[in-house]
Length: 267
Ligand SMILES: NC(=O)c1ccc[n+]([C@@H]2O[C@H](COP(=O)([O-])OP(=O)(O)OC[C@H]3O[C@@H](n4cnc5c(N)ncnc54)[C@H](O)[C@@H]3O)[C@@H](O)[C@H]2O)c1
Image (cartoon, rainbow, N blue to C red):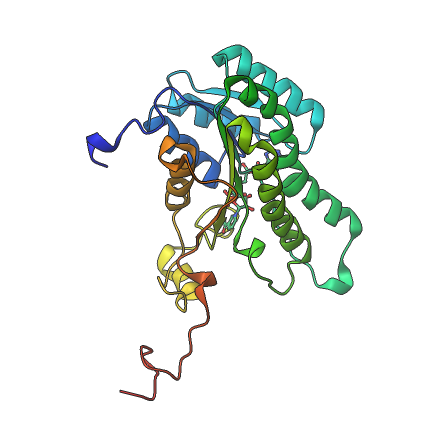
């Protein structure tokens, strides 16, 4: 990245949840490289500590189970005590879950909604008084393409991500006049422990995504770039919006029999 592009979050205090690996880690690293003071939360404290230490500077980390109100109270208080304020919250921590509908266990539904939906709600609850006092803030909810459309086997996850998309718009209305912007990001397939759990080589994984307009899986930093924009003052008039960062996955359907396809019948 060109040197003149650095510093887009200079001095901003940014919380990133689920920062021990994957997209959260990539977001933390990108934000720190743009001058942010990052505060990282995750249930995996061992990995979290390693990431924070590697980022260095004044990177802060603390155990956080996003589904727990008391955890959020302690975490947000610790961040405020350390840095004096909170400018940005990236609600990134999440769990995926697959099940045929006949096998659905209500406990799984509650667990997935607890992390993916209640987690961001509680995070927003606890940073709001601090952001209101500062008169500004940016909250970024990491939803999914599964918050924009449906997919087989994904009842719990889809419910959690559609709900998060809707809640984003509620909070945009509720907090806008306090100077707090709230937006959602909708990643497609991303090369993280969640998106590529077997750690298969990119060329192999890309086969799954070959019908997408961009024909490949995304890199976690490519999603973090969208969050960087929404966190920065460049997005000062954007709230209640949803940004798909999905290689075009939700743009439509690739029709193999039409022009533009190698298998197409027409010249
Ligand atoms: N990878 C993808 O293909 C993809 C696609 C669309 C959306 N997403 C979403 O992006 C976000 C990040 O996904 P990822 O691919 O980096 O996943 P990941 O599994 O690689 O990382 C998720 C992180 O969240 C943490 N976490 C889980 N439960 C937690 C809790 N209760 N409290 C705090 N931390 C918790 C995990 O320990 C882990 O470090 C998630 O919300 C996910 O649903 C991912």
